[in-house]
Length: 98
Image (cartoon, rainbow, N blue to C red):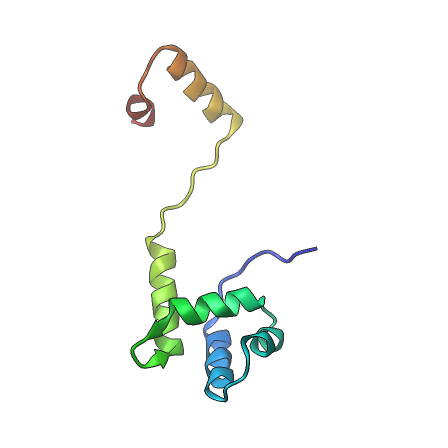
């Protein structure tokens, strides 16, 4: 069973940095940190600056991306029923949203 996704911690980012500095392969880093190799690849490519991968900067950028993302709205049965009813009355999506 797959474990649920969690964001990388600042400590994990420091581990990644230390392993990369010693020129370890992404696969080895993933095993040591306990993450998928694709997570390591994405982390390194997404947060690589002019001076390479820097864990403080990477963590700050990740936090900013996380906080800027709007929360998704759960489509509950009552909400679906209301939307369906409004659509039958020929309301526009903008009117329903408001």
